[in-house]
Image (cartoon, rainbow, N blue to C red; front, top):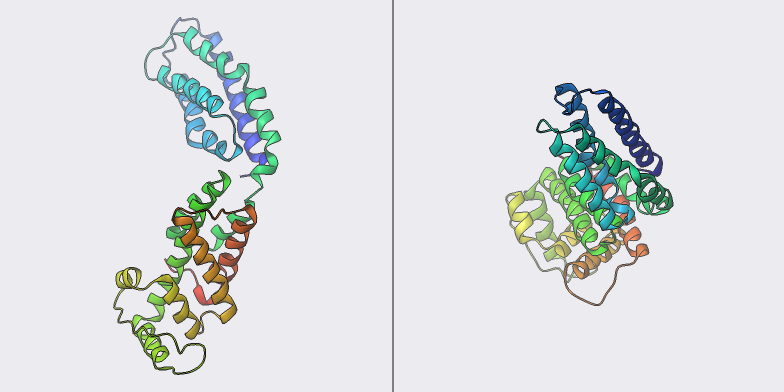
Length: 276
């Protein structure tokens, strides 16, 4: 979601509210009873909750301001549920429109740079499965709200899900075989690897194979090379540091590097094709 789209949505809700106000003023009764008019008002309020309010989350707009408009639209929605007074509708709409431009639209315009801050992370969504997107959408939301450590934990979970599904497709017997072959190596890069796995299903893989060991098998299996292994190990270390209390902070650059590596080595890697 970019600046232009958010501003368009905000301007549209103003336009709709102004038209609704004109229609309400034309009503001769003191109460708004026509279903079609109440439906239009209800639709406008629902759009705020389901779409616009969520778009404001990454902009760091004052919680007090967001809460104020939340209550205004909540009241507008409640009015549509009964035969409410015309004056109540007009008062609520006027309250919404009074400072809408200065408190919301101007703030969005000032926050445009922040909206784009982690726009690049959304590229990963285009090559992710539905299950992975559950993690990645939350990860991006955390990143946009400066919860970098939470974002890393979720992002790594999505990447490991892709890797696990690849192992499942290639076969657990083959995975077990590779671990046995590695254990039998007595010299070179794999000589210290001493674990032999006997995995029969995805649940066992998830529960019994540590991510660090998994990366070693992936390298021996030629699904990643040694450089990619090292980069993913760094990502895994960042994930562990982020998942436990500690003094290590995560910077904007750390987060960008983390997702760049996941995108290149895992999500865009032809050896790890999306598998639902």
